Amino acid sequence: MTSPLALTALTALSPLDGRYERKVAGLRSFFSEFALIKYRVHVEIEWLIALSLEPQIAECPSFTKATIEALRVAAATFSVGDAERVKAIEATTNHDVKAVEYWLRERFDNNAEVKKSQAFMHFACTSEDINNLSHALMLKSALDAVLHPALSRIGGKLQSLAHVHAAVSMLAHTHGQPASPTTLGKEIANVAYRLRRGEKAIADIGILGKINGAVGNYNAHRSAYPSLDWPAFCKQFVEGLGLTFNPYTIQIEPHDYMAELFDAFARVNTILIDLNRDIWGYISLGYFKQIAKAGEIGSSTMPHKVNPIDFENSEGNLGLANALLRHMAEKLPISRWQRDLTDSTVLRNMGVAFGYCVLAYDSLARGLEKLEVNHTKIASHLDASWDVLAEPVQTVMRKYGIDDAYEQLKELTRGKGGIGRELLHEFIAGLSIPDADKTLLLSLTPANYIGLATQLAREI
Image 1 (cartoon, rainbow, N blue to C red):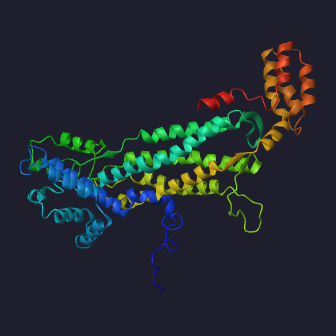
Image 2 (tube, helix red, strand yellow):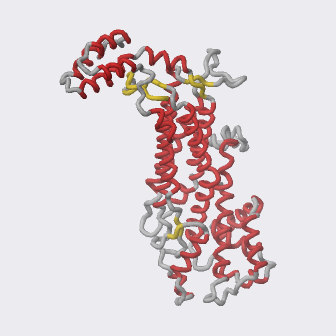
Image 3 (cartoon, rainbow, N blue to C red):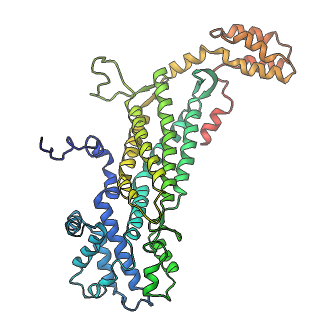
């Protein structure tokens, strides 16, 4: 049997940890094994501090400010070396959360206050009390530090392009066929608006947490301190972490908010897949040119090519992200009775799903920055499509009660392979409509028949 290869960027099983490692490195602080352990330490420490500050829990006396600071410093400065020690303890305990508790006892063995209260480390907690809060904080932190900024970068670029190209007339294509003109800026504004709504949907989702014991009933809590209002205490604790309190759970926080979040990201990703495909098509039509990068090769045999690889890479990685996000959204809210472990291994792949998101967002943003409008090509398509003005002509005819207006324009234009300005103007001149309307129709061109497109693009 061949010996396993040493792990390097070239030998990594996942391209996220190999070929694309640098592009997704920002997520390691939030979704790695190290990050999970660090957030567990943070939650355990904050729970111990909260217990010490509760007057009704006299057996866990209040810590001094110095000890509270020392505890929080231990969480804030938790290192890879510390995590390796936790993993070493886990090798004996065969329990990852319990290993964190034992590490804390070891870490503060020389602190008399903490040592006196070490029985209150992990007090009344099931592992999932710590894990669900850690996962919630991982998501919240990654959203704030990486994911929202990545989407905002794309949204800002789309808004800028919409404004800059608000008045650039462009032939629309419905069903792939020439249709009523629009502007390039307005088409980009459409996506900017969709993305903005998608981002708001993500931002509006509450990140939930619980710390209510083995089956969600505060059984252990109440057995030790029956007079304490544990739901209120735990609500204050969870909200103090910056999360939304979930008062009704089984052993696990049921992950419904995660399903909402992952679905919301998948919907945003679908919008961006649509954008990637549209831009790919416009590049194919020649409406966009791509700014060539010095030294870059488009084809190994065709030297002239500048391929739309940024948009293709983005589309492909968004598809991978959505496959994972949608699986997690469907699987995570399902747990047999009060608890099964099927969610545990799935949750370890949150970083993989968001890694593909970040990779795709980066490719798309870089692709957008390399686009250059080909005004000549866009204008030539407009000039060859005078038949799109059949719409305003038949609409004005309807205004004056000409019953067969649509049919007349259909006969004039449909399937004719395009009609010219002269033939259309000859038809307009023969209409029995007021001269003012004739003048308006005769002033129309495929380039200026754009309705309110410019205004709409500038208002995004």
